Image (tube, rainbow, N blue to C red):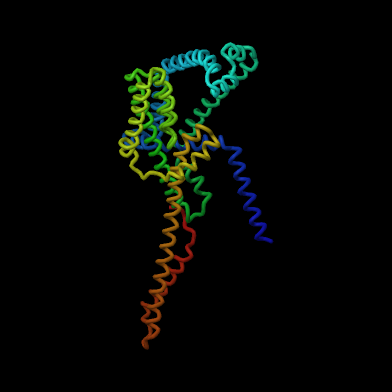
Length: 391
């Protein structure tokens, strides 16, 4: 009965923990993102701290430099990006107005689609007649924008906090573990942090390179909306396995407006850039072992279900952290197995020595007897180690 009660308590605690994680998933997401940002910028802080900067000054310089770079990019590219979006909206409206009557008189499958969609005047009337619905839509967009901006501010603030108070934070969560596991847990934490930071820096550098190369190539090819397509390409690079489709399809559709030749050339150029980043640039930036594809795929499914497109972007980083943790657990298990085997071998040899001396007629010398007793105590301690304080 007591065993059943324990199993019931464990199941109930697990379900409660999963429920709490689901209810507070947004807070957990902000927490993870802040840790990711702190891990990505920490090497830059270390380098500045080694060149006559205090730790606080190095943190201030790194974060202010990042903010300044973001402001410069938004200020320089924002107007052009806004103009492209406005032009895309205008042309989409004109294309809809022209295409709907054609499809209404086209093949059966086009007629089926057109019959379920309002024509251009009806669409305009639908959007403008219900002012309350339009106000709700605009309010929802504004609310989402404010939520995103607030989330970015919280991520930045938490990241600065982790960078400043890293040692105290580590001591806090390590104190929850048994004393004999704290050193190992701290080493695993540092390994995860270093691996995740390296992965994030690698992906961000490649995303920026994809944006620059694609934007330059699309402009030289004369492709419409080069800035918007290049931005989609940079974001698509952050999504593994299926990210290429997020840029290939829009490039193909935009290129087809000016003919098959431009569309094919743009698609080929996009594939060349993505393959060059994958085969040439990434091995030189991210020198660590590639992560298990099946783990990345499973993480993609879970994160996409939970967070949508944001989950797709975060999934590879979480998969990298999980694989580093799994490798550390496997390494610990192998070390424990080797330690047990070594202790067993030593105990067998010590037994042989004791048996050999017991078969002799002469008594065991006192120094040998004392050494055997000390070895026996050491082996017993190795089999049942006592908790040790954190080093």
